[in-house]
Length: 462
Image 1: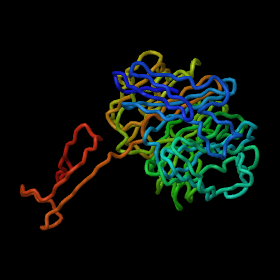
Image 2: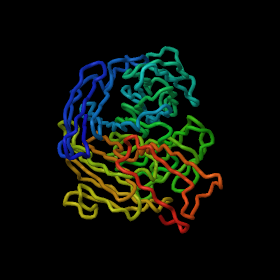
Image 3: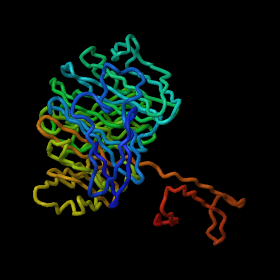
């Protein structure tokens, strides 16, 4: 587990191990904190599939800090042949409506392929329901007997978890059967989703593809993807619909219409200059399959943030980008930002990086030409990224057949605004006569350091 912070001074944190003890420490911008979860076997993070389909009270972590922190988990498995990563979305992970994504495993699934999703309650007396509009029979859910979807009225208290898992080799329905599953709750929960192992390819190789996801209110209709170094067969984009009649377009061309719980996979041959732009008519959940090399054995999958004007702010920092535990990896990042934005990496212009760091970009996005992308490789240690405009940053690292990665930014949350608007009885128009007939009030509630009002002029200037 890697913990870092944008704060220059010490930040106090506590790792609460569910069902176990607590670990307290400090972290600063210059000194990330690394916690070794386990050297092998099952742990508070990795659950034995034989214990799934039941409420569990001794898995997972709840991490608190007195200032903002980044938290991620990286793992190496299969005698170092596979790797994976999960980046916590923090409070943005909380929600009540989620759609699951996994690999689709269309090749020859191996005996150690596993698709899953897991969820943790953040409040006592939480009820969770699981439905799947696409696959209601034929699944063989681990430890569930003849149980099929829907699975309703799962009752959890704070910190308790529940995992649903299927082995793709058991039935054809299991290969992609969990994709699109609706996870809904009456109180906020957090959800992880993916495959360990699995593949978007069809050659029978495997790797981990896992991540923490966000709920319906934080997904969107527009996404930009930057291609990795894999083949088109597994450099795939998975689009999961939440509503019926969701139209999907790639690079400006309509390609499909899908219903709630169904999905569309955009194959890697849609990439143009290593970019892909996906737009939809309704909000969707989107996962990106990415490759570290041309080998199908070297791939990953992570949850992708939508384009949003609120996705501003810097990533400071991604800790020890070239490491998983004691093992060295080749590290890099992808960046999506607005055309013309000033971008800094480790406080140096992206166009003026030191020897050994290779920068590809800026590359204009077809179908969304006001955005550009970068790929940067050869990075080591702690990595900060700054942009003068919108910023979406994912990290990746790879060693041999093992690859991991995930997004460190882009999941914006709307500020909490309490607006009390009062208009005079003279009408609903705001007076320009100098007489105040409208009062705007914002209750700060500790969410802002300061507030500034701006007036929009008739020529759309401010």
